[in-house]
Length: 294
Image 1 (cartoon, rainbow, N blue to C red):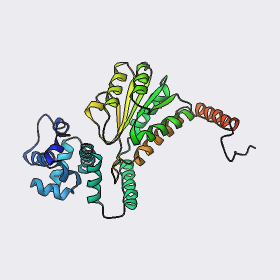
Image 2 (image 1 turned 90 degrees about the horizontal axis):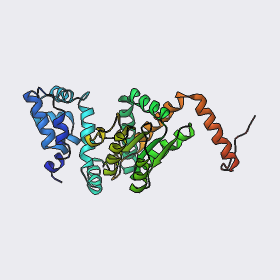
Image 3 (image 1 turned 90 degrees about the vertical axis):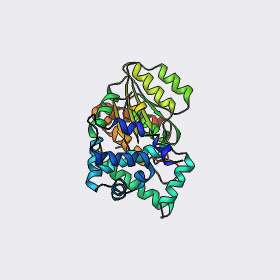
Image 4 (image 1 turned 120 degrees about the vertical axis):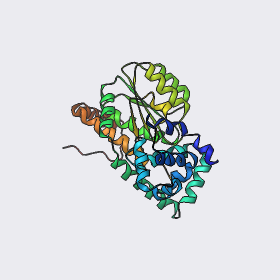
C-alpha cells in the first residue's frame, strides 16, 4: 500500500478536526506531512516529524492541540490505529516485524505494558461511570463483539450478569445480531466493542439501536465517524499488538473497570446475584474444589 492510499483512510477525519479559523502556516505544514506520509508520521518520533515538516518540536505539539488532542502522543496513537486499520493482516504483520528487534514474546509483553500505562494516563472515569449507570438502569444490554475481540465482549457480559444485570454478548454472526437488534427497546443499551478494522454490521447495529431510542456506547481503538455518530460515549483503548492481530489486554482492562463500577452502583443487588450464582454452581457440581462454609 502506498503512502497516499493509506492517507485516504483518515484524510477526511483529520481535515474535519481542523478548526474553522484554519491552521497557521507552520501547523499546516505539519498537517500536510500527516496526510502525505502517514506511515512515517505513525511510526516516527516527534523529532522526525518536526524535521519532515521543517518546524520545531513545539510546533508539532501545538498542531496536535489545535486538532483537539492533548499533545502529539495522543494524536499519534489515533493516527496509528487508523493507519493500521487500513492494512491487511499480512501487511500489519510486516509492519510489526520490521519495527521490533526483540523476540515476539517479549515484544508483545512490552507492548501490552506500554498500552496499559497509556490507558491509565488517559483513563476517562466519567465515561466509565456513565456507561455503568446506563447498564444498571437498562432493561437489557446487548454487547456487540466479533472476531478475536469477541472475548472482550463475552467477559464483560459474563461478569455483568454475575453482578445481577441482564447483559448478553452477540458474537455468533449477523443473523443473531439482526435478531437481537430487532428486539431492542428504547430502555435498552447497546455497547459496540471493535478494534483494528470495523465491521459494517457493527456500524449498522449501532445506528439501528440509536434510531430505536436505545443508548449506544463504544469501546474502540479509533473513533470512526460512522460509529461515533451513533454513540453517546466512546472509550478509546490502545489495541495494537505486535503480530497480525490486535491486543485484547487494554480492552479487557477497560471492561473489567466497567464491571467493577457497575457492581458498586447497587452492592446489595450484586451480592444477592453472586450468592444465587454460587448456589447454582454448587447445585450443578461445577467446581472441583467447593468453598467451605462457616
